[in-house]
Length: 464
Image (cartoon, rainbow, N blue to C red; front, side, top):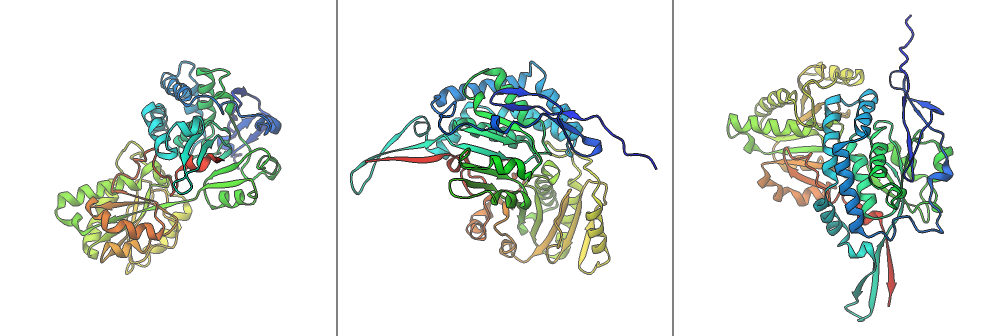
């Protein structure tokens, strides 16, 4: 038998308080995607409680200046760091190269001043409460008080399904002026360190650069996490990811150490009978729904996996055929080819093909997309461009399938959102958008049902 092909390990550096740490003390990953990391120095990854964080008193306007310069540096990439990170990501990530290239091309746009100013206003109420103490008056007693959104100490276990998660983590962390340890995710190894190296290049030795560290350890490594995830070092653990990640995080939570969880989510679509007004309208609706279903190869939480369509079985079958065709279209965050379906999904779908009285299936397993029409939701998790479409008598019937794990709901036509949004919110939904707009996530709006920066900071009172 042939031995597995062993690929040379790709080097992953750490960034510790603005300084690059290199080394190949440890190797991780499968044979085809090995990577090496430096030795972990746990003492270097924390900031002493008895000292203020480096940027606690740095004016927010100055921090925004640095962030803008950082975005410009990333776009120019004078040292080739971003290009190198992209190359290494292509070699180790499960995402197609084209998606990674487009994601990296969009990173500089995240660091723009108008967006930062909007986020601070929307999430925290203004820069004054970040830079200092805002004075307020109690309407009942007439007493004067002062409050501050005090910079926190956070450890971040981030998701790696999109490079934008690392970028937004760094941006939000900068705007709240705290200290931040980022655990590098195994499915996005190089973005966080590349961005922090850009920050250090733009502002070497600046308090902001010294406020961030990023390091890799195997998720769930109790020897590491039991030492770091403690209230004497950090106020909160910000955890993204699947159920196992959140469950692992919860075991470290106790007095003085809070969990801020971006829980695992799925998304759905609700399509009204107006879609069948004409063949042209139906084609347009299918294209919008396909865009929502293939975001980042359906690896993003916003990607629609279940679609509830108001119509007869015959009408819905017409829609399903068009949807499957449009799922194979090249888009900014989706490739035309896709990836072949894994064996476990093939077996699930093959089982449905034997029950044609209850299921109808469009598409094959090459990766362009599979659509399954059924009366009830399938019992497995649609993934890798697999969409389950269900005919419903009214969109209210579809609403009943939403729950607290439903993040985004795309609705067609948009005029019907108003009649559905209260019921959707009551079921636990956090975001309602026009069909086709699931991927247009705007910073400064609630995420997963809360304002992230408002949750991240420590709200402190000086009363009377």
